Image (cartoon, rainbow, N blue to C red; front, side, top):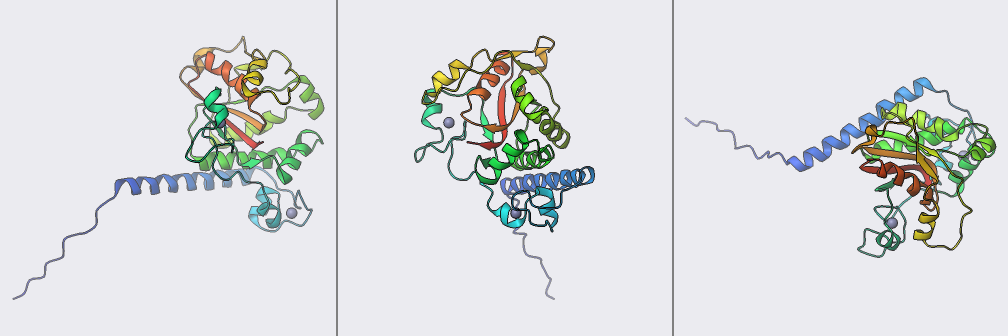
Length: 271
Ligand SMILES: [Zn+2]
Ligand SMILES: [Zn+2]
């Protein structure tokens, strides 16, 4: 009588692939879950911010942009410097010439967009034209992008603004974005720095080292803040728009000098 033997199992678990898939699945679900919470809290507008067409789908309401305008968002793509995010890297290099010569105080820049088109308009209207409601959409883009990138941080610090900036806007534009970001990511906010000096006039054509140096002393540690909190921590420095990175660098420098281990710049746009 013939006995049936099952063939030996060929299933071998590839741990590396398994863990990558698991990580992606977790990230996907975290983003989805936080979007649900978000929708329950905030109301949406009815027309596209950019073209004024009626919004129809869930995603259009979520971004305040119609599908066509969403397709034209200036996403940051292509090879860029692993520190400052600049596109000026040569083939096979991971670091740009500027960072090789004058490395920044921060470790990374996470920004979904370039400062162009709809993105530039959104920032302008939010900060200069008083469209306060736009904070929500800017904050959503920043937060979704950060969560998808899968980085970890201990605290969020938003870039301290000047009185002049607050005067133009009429409110603290970054605080609203930071509050949203912190609520959805669960990363607590701290307020370790303040702006102790005005930023000197931008010196066009100067190199990075000169720009960096000219901004030393613009930020200081808040006298009421206990620097023990910063020791060996990873800090997110939140800004709406990163231009040359000199201001962010000056702020990151104060955080590092007072014990922070890593500083990640998180922004809506990077020039
Ligand atoms: Zn549109
Ligand atoms: Zn660089």
